[in-house]
Amino acid sequence: MSPEYAAFLDESSAVRSEEHQEYLVCAAVVPVQDADAIREKLLPLRLKGQIKLHWTDESEARQRKIVAAISEMAPMTAVVTHLSHRQRKTERFRRKCLETIYYELAGMGVRDVTCEARTASQNRDDLAHIVALRSQKVVSADFRINHCRGGEEPLLWLPDIFLGAINARHKGDSWYYDALQEFLILESKTPESL
Image 1 (cartoon, rainbow, N blue to C red):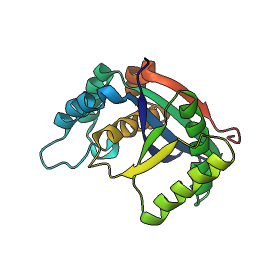
Image 2 (image 1 turned 90 degrees about the vertical axis):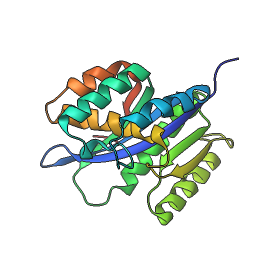
Image 3 (image 1 turned 30 degrees about the horizontal axis):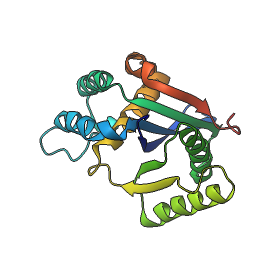
């Protein structure tokens, strides 16, 4: 019997030029049977007093150490992006990325997705979005999402680190991306992306 997989999802929004911005959604795809072991490997990467790993809070030396440790864990990762003209509101782009990544994850046999929690109303909107995608047959009725704070679920640190590596590459430092690239099982854009 093939292993069951769960996904742990985070997102990022980044300015790419004076005219363009990119919304990115990343999911770390983890065999359910290995989830606890990977959590145990991630926890020691925190500094004393640190609630969670967060790419933008880490020094360059720490980022390198974290990426090296994660590359030994071999997590599979899927990334969907949406490039658009710059604008303040990005929720529509987020939904487009989520729709694409949910569809791809469902095709891989993933049925459970944990998203990093945002506000209560945004979390409710995410749940309503899944209901709509089920009714449109984008995902099956057994495809579920839940929300968790980053400090409570170490597996949410994986997509944050991958997104940090992608954003660093766009800023001219490809070391992190190169170290993690072999674990990307999907890197795609939404159909509406520029």
